[in-house]
Amino acid sequence: MRIKDIFDRKKFSLSFEVFPPTREGNIDTLFTAIQELQVLKPDFISVTYGAGGGTKNKTVEIASKIKKDFSCEVLAHLTCVNSTATDITKILDEFVSHGIENILALRGDPPHGEGKFKPTKGGFNFANELTDFINKQGTFCVGVAGYPEKHPDASSMLTDIKNLKKKVDAGADFITTQLFFDNDDFYRFVELVRAQGITVPIIPGIFPALNYKQIIRISELCGAKIPVSLGEKMDRLRDKPEETEKYGIEYAIRQAEALVENAVTGLHFYTMNKSNAVIEIVSNMRLSSKRQ
Image (tube, rainbow, N blue to C red; front, side, top):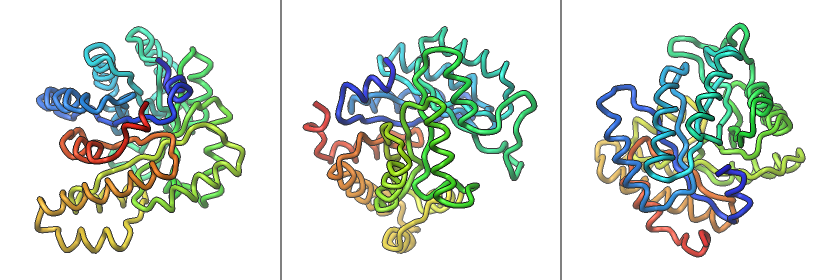
């Protein structure tokens, strides 16, 4: 099923992101986590592409297994990195052969060791070009990324949202946001996006802050700011991992519940291939009436 049809059918969606492990031995652990997440009855699970497209074959493998063995819809990531148009066509053909209908079209991050994104000769410079190309190749449902605190490479918030509009005008069916920790940033983002005439669903991305060092690193990579209250608490608990995780779960519950109260289209959790914390967060939220 196409994700846009899920949004048309339901008022609220629940979804999770996983990523292909870099080591072969971790694949079973990933599938165990996915199996455990099924208790939450997700509407779809997204599978990332890996830095530099290094795990693209695993992306297809994992997405196909989720759809076949877990009977859950999937959203396969696809980037412009290290790929020509011919390469992309082959990947799209592979998606079709595995029954994968949903794609998250991304420019992608530079490969490890490269400071800036460099387009591949015969490939694409931006996600809007990739989105347009995908839509011309078949009847895929295409999602794109949005940045509540702007993309790190964008010169301004307005410039970033105008770039987002290019992606939607190229045929994007929905927007999934980068992580954020202050809901006000998301609300302002939505207002600015709607003011540009963008009407597609916008799904907020939630990243549970469970580890001090991890949250600092992730925030630096994506440009998300850490609210003072969250940062100070995490700093005080940095040498107490169990208490850090407990507080991170509590914070994520409050953040997600506030978003739900403000009538978001759904919630998308970045799981880091771990199920326990996300299960605890969602299980402690009052979502049953939203998911009818």
